[in-house]
Image (cartoon, rainbow, N blue to C red; front, top):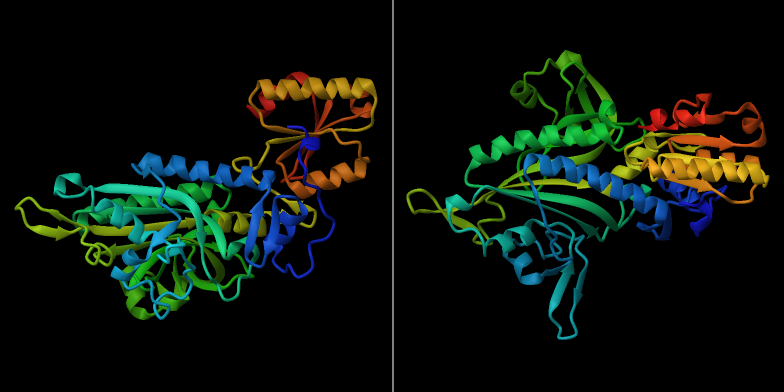
Length: 415
């Protein structure tokens, strides 16, 4: 893609009132647009990154046996009333609306009821189980005070998975596979070394749950980490009984600040029972389906990545999720430079390398600053000076390493 095709422009300063680092950088780099507090639109660059993260998650989920679908955003009040989650006393973050016929609805803020309600039409026997379903969609939360940029908004993009098993043993077998699948996701998006499985509260779902916490000094959660076993305990459930269950040496735990990037819950029959999601077992007796919940906020994950993978010049995105792999810059309007740049552009595209060509008539300093801010992994520079040497200048955004390469080295460099 040519950079002139993007309608967005970079900004030297973040908008007034935007305090979070992730939103400041993403707005300045032209990835997102702030509609209002807690609500952001994703511009072309930002959308490409979201889709790249989504595809990584999809690949890992499909490998474990999940089936993708999509539930509706408008949700039935009757279904919510059956689980007692329509009342403001129970859930005060649900956006409510109504049809012209006065029928009351809500905007999707989580999907346990939606999936369970659908499966009442399709599950009748133990032979129908297990079922593993997920979807990607926008979720809405009527947060009283949206903060932390795209990490905690009133509208965000997420992936929700729900497992439907015949009993706890079948559920637990799959639950363990999900721990591995999610660690794979965090490794692929560049957070693997800083993200740890954490024992946590189950909230309204269960006594305990698991979450993945990513280390960062500035964030809201406190965890106690065993750096050898790579497992942690959230401060909210930290006590001797929990330590006994996990077999951890209390003296080896290190206190760390972190942010939650994913959680899993054992739901059991909390939603299947009130929604009458049952099956007949091998003896013909009715049993409640045993459920599990596995959620990850994709936009939140992007916010965490930008908070951690950035420097004083801008964003530093890993290859796996960057909007483009190569940022191709040319300096000046010399016909030879432009011809050579076009030749490189076509060569990269022929190799299926996603490339953003900065074809704007800007000064060198502006192009370099924009490239660093946007954070594409590799920058190739074509200029009269590089042409004189007969080589191309290649810069690694993460390491800052600059080296000269031959045109013929493009294939081996990026494939």
